[in-house]
Image (cartoon, rainbow, N blue to C red; front, side, top):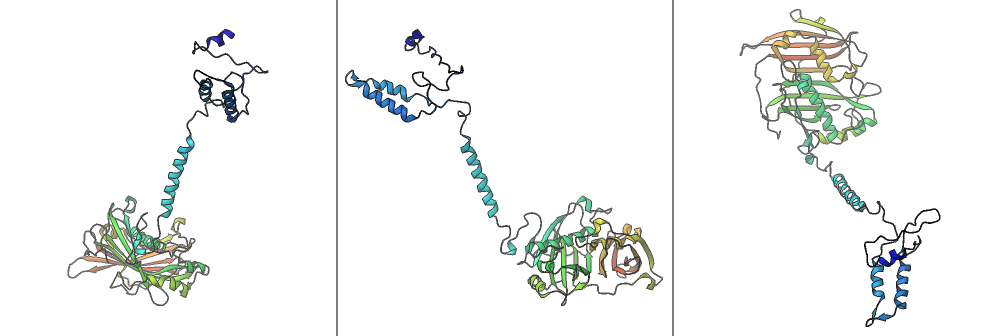
Length: 419
């Protein structure tokens, strides 16, 4: 061992002497410069103090140069007493994680700073496909793409599809305007009083039916209807050509959710909705003709068709626990003869809602068909009178439909988008 120590200055590659084992047969965790086990609590101050004492004890030689300089040089390069392990040799990942966290926090801040509800309604954009408010907040516009499951045997959208579009835009209008309470189209003041809207009358004129893949633009707005009602109008046009597809108007009244009776419009509710009223109607010449009574009172010249045993499904109920008004249209047309659908298309419909239909109702549909001859064109058109009633007797809906032969082009009107 003494020979190894003596030869080490001349043979730097010689291995260092093995450190003695402790009492348990293990080597110490760290060694100092002399190969002596360092105490775990030794600090850097002790090393610096040792260097100072060594510098003071060694005399100057060779022209005043201290021999301790070489000793100091070797001492500075001595590694720390902390053992080098796998973990403390890894790079410092905390800086990278801090940078990633900073980036995510900045992105989250930018996202939350986005103003999804601008102060001016005309600044609302159709970010999520829910439509937007236009004309200083007085009108709502939304686009719909006709899906494959919304077309029928004629390869065109059904009347029920377009009626669903009308209902969807009406609810989105209320929601986007910030007037949607916890009910189905009810305002906050209506929700406090257990009130909701029910449609009493509706009229729609169809100029043409869109096809699969077409995009339609639906505009809707509201106005007053007497002292105790509201009116809502719609205008559907082709988003590419601007040609009118459908025009519709409706009248609405309030019903109490608990008593199921009609109610007057409270002043608080009127204050909420009046700023959105527009003095405009989608249909100028409305069909105000008297609708039919039960079939027994009609003339024998009209062909009568009856469909009984109609019952609501669970999917036919809306959030107010009564049958959705679009379902009534399907029931009304259920009793019409199939030959009408094969040779004609629905041109217009007028609906007069008399009472609500609930889950346990059993209904019957009556249809009377009348032929009309156009003297100028010589074309024969049809109009039907419908009554949807409970099998126990009370009338649910009365309606009138007008039909034109297939292939007949209705007078198309192009209305600018600024309407």
